[in-house]
Image 1 (tube, rainbow, N blue to C red):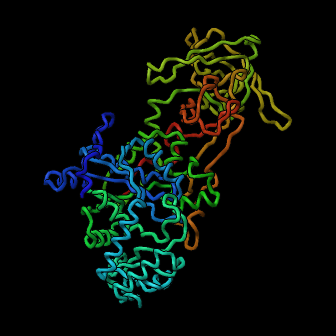
Image 2 (cartoon, rainbow, N blue to C red):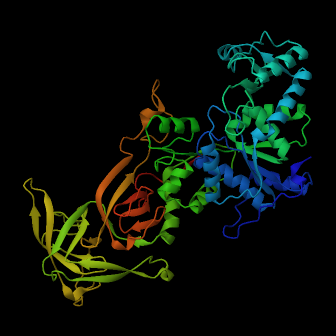
Length: 574
């Protein structure tokens, strides 16, 4: 039975907070199918393999499948294509569900696993054997590759291709019983070794894996290949539009061949759309796994990674990701989107929502000599000047403060409007101060500034009307909270990390300066109650997120994005 017509499936309701996207060729297909009465309603799915965490490219597929279900009153499934026990783990199943919910895409009760269908898939494999459409092959993996041919040369048939259906059934049943070792036998489709489509040259349908499965344990020692399990799982669930990225276009003939030759309850159709690739990173799960396992990054959620768990830890809002991936368009041409365009979207969202605070990343102590010792006061500053309803925050002030070291030059050029000897600047929201002396250590390094303030300029303006061009941020030394700040740059030096010199690995393009740790920072005391995941704009510095490594006595911040595009143009190359 076609699951699209089953009772109990929960239609996805349109979200009122985001407008429907402009039409594209996938939506045109869905609309035409519904208008023609081919389906009562649309059923889409996102089918991740639980062998790693999802990345920004997956967000495109998730949002597209879920969005179509929303727009057309259909049903959205989450199905794990868990057919390889060697690489899959339960932690990834849990992590993937968590991050998809965070992204704002809900599958309701429609959660499925390909492993739920193992018995049915096995029976359909026997059906192909009995029809003479599949055979057990004894060639080794290397021999199968050698027989496969190339784009210019046809493949050679396996010497085991003409085994009888009875022989093949008996061998396949013995494979299931565990009589053979890994790599000694596989089940292959019997299609056409001369096909111009390489995936149609007698592809492998089943292989032996004597490894425990995260859901079925040791119940099975043979497992279906992705191409076999994927299309038949779609058919079992009544998927109407099987949407996948362009790298699967050559797999569509095999998808259709299998579905057409097995007595499935429905006939799904595959449609391909452009893959989303970001510059200065990689979105191959195999390569991301290598970065983690070989220690190039700390884990899957290292904020330099393009994984969604990493983006969440970095402080990116799910709304930013949804807006970004859909703004790149649904096309039939692969595209590379500059990372700066993604960061621009993040910045646009956070500018409207992030509370403002002051933090000093490279602190320089300032003593205001004429400010009374032991005295302190506070200044009201807006939580977010773009949102009056956010109210005000009280920022404490005292005789000793920290400013950013870059905001002082001992011999400033003419157009340097910050602090220098004899120069006056505005302390953000507080007073006008003038540098009167510079204190250095034995190495000649500036370690402290002596300044004088004008008590008549409370709030930062001079009552006599004198103009001061420079405004700098600060924190009270007495009240400041200690912090560590992690500054992130692009993970790779090159825009296209895969385009390395011949013989080099993609890791050769890694950026050795992608992470800069800044201990010894200070932030204003209003952040005392900040918790992991909170995002703030450090005035004049950028947007920063409280990291999970924070402790009550030492906050840790990840830089989410800078305040403006700093290294790349906002562009798309298709």
